[in-house]
Length: 307
Ligand code: ADP
Image 1 (cartoon, rainbow, N blue to C red):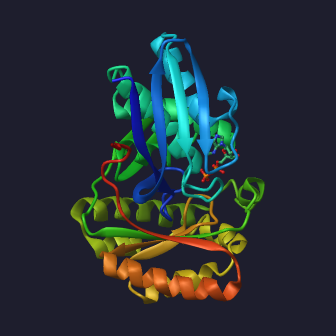
Image 2 (tube, protein in one colour):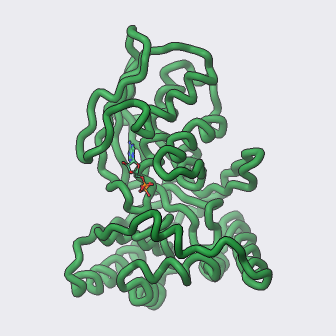
């Protein structure tokens, strides 16, 4: 086996209350990649289709993540990476994470799986560091482990896979506007009043419990963010209208996907997810803005091999 074609999924990070620590994996949105082991040592990005991204290994998150893996292994292997981008960069559904996680997952397989999926997270985080200046794991962890994940601690890194209730579906709208990372960062406050912190960690506990006990109602009432959403949502057109439409049409909860501008709605059952999608579509059509809408089951497997 010298070459693998894979599906590298999009992911939704934060999930309202879990800023920087929670995330989940999507199934119908993702990139394709072909990763090959070649005789001549060195990592090369040989093809990128679907996006204008750097071909230089050290400027592409996939190259940087694989570099970190090979360095740890102490091996000078030849790797060629082809990226077929379907997830738009800057959408807030883990475009960079799909490439970082996909590349290390496939290289690890081609080398006989020296690392566990959990061990691959730290290599993929090096790609995230290149993309955003911050080595966060809330997108790469669900891409690598599948389902819902929790970063219990960054130092030392301790990432847990949670349970995936089978009837959960995500509706994601991606308004095609540019929200500058610097803007979405600058609106965040770096200190949190204790009363809000108590509210927030209560919800994180509730969400984790809801996922494990498959209590959809508890999942819904825990999808609440009193810290980041009130500040960041002002950067997203029609955020409140979309959120209210999602909730009044049966979504368990709705919020900002990653740092936005995508908005996610978590739903029980595909029928509700599709109904929510069509209501949100009506709202966004009126704005005149371009947008994409995705409806997806939660992908419990994560990255997978394509034939
Ligand atoms: P998202 O929030 O959807 O993950 P980001 O804004 O975090 O998107 O990441 C996109 C940034 O990462 C862009 O600046 C892009 O040029 C850079 N980048 C480098 N390599 C890749 C890659 N292979 N895939 C996606 N983005 C990449």
